[in-house]
Amino acid sequence: MIFKLISMTTNEFAKKVNLHVGSLRSHALNFTKNLEDANDLLQDTLLKATRFARNYQEGTNIKGWLFVIMKNTFINSYHKSVRHRANFVQEEDISDAHLFQTASKNEVITTLGLEEINSALDRLPKQYSVPFVKYFEGYKYEEIARELNLPVGTVKTHIHQARVILKKKLKHYHTD
Image (cartoon, rainbow, N blue to C red; front, side, top):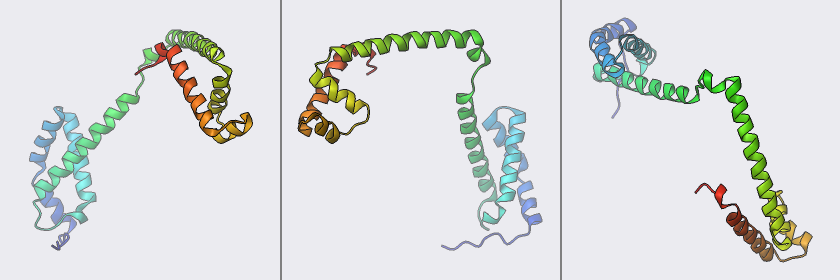
């Protein structure tokens, strides 16, 4: 099905749109529940309708077309404000006292955690700890196997065993 794109002048299009401003304003108020926000939404809708007038297909219900533009504008604006609020930090959240308290608490937890992790690593049998630490440092199974003169399968098993033991010893850090 081929549609004829708008063949009317900008003035004709503006007159058609202006016939629906009242119902668009009411529709905007239903979305926003606030007159100022409704007027902003109406203005954004009219700007987009004018900007995309060339996409209007003659014979299409212009009022429905405008309502779809308004609905999409409102939804996009809503999603944008939700993202903005999620990224917004309250001033009291970043006060000097709060930052000091949070940093001190994190430092203590990190220090205690690292000490406990290092202690658990030290208690691992060497046959498990050496391959595990190398793997943790970024070495590949094959590199570890070559260096330790072990089969790759044995290296994988030792690393797996180290994980199992560490998971048991450090289970209070596990979040699942």
